[in-house]
Length: 273
Image (cartoon, rainbow, N blue to C red; front, side, top):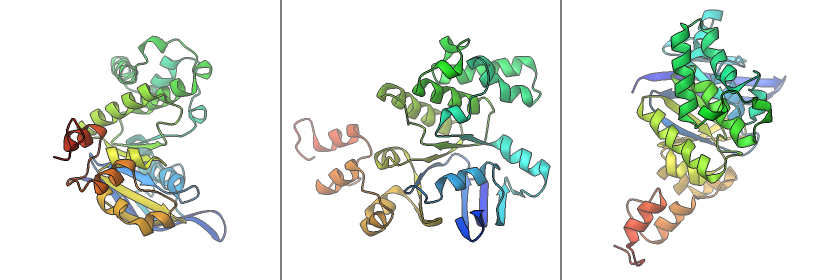
């Protein structure tokens, strides 16, 4: 797969002598589904802010589509190509209506009006927001605001999408809609990197896991490899996913990623096979 984003020995400190992220070397390729795990303060948010160009490295370099980010033009390319959805939607919402909010980014790219309209229509439809066009974002519920921020970034047509706890504030129905849209976006070649505390979601959705601890990348591997290492998980304050544990207890191979796969494996009456 084509490499989109690469960190080479990147470090960052919010205050002198205390690195929030240090010595990070990692890459993300087109179409990847990556879950970023770690407890609070592990470095996940700093990684995202560096990946989107909000922060600049103290040391090392960020490379986007083969070009090191060194000049203002490189930084603009990075910010256009890497979308970031914050955990708190109120940080991201500025416009008077949902339609204005979602159209703001494409309009700043000086796109033709018909292209802006197409992007806005598709982004609103993707997250079930067609009826919210003229609503004021500040008066929406937390879950509705989160969906608007997702549509906001999607309208920018990024190559890589970073999502910080995207299911926070979503009810079960809209959390399922979110996963469906993530699957659709991944199928279109968009790389998705999701920071989450939900190990069950990571097991169900991701094809790769980045595990951060104390400002460093503690592990980078498949979900099967990461979640099999109980010592590593305990060090990072995480537990094994429920379906991972259930599949291991039942001796299933491959391990089920979804409840439906578990049901198929054990049979309608709960008998293995």
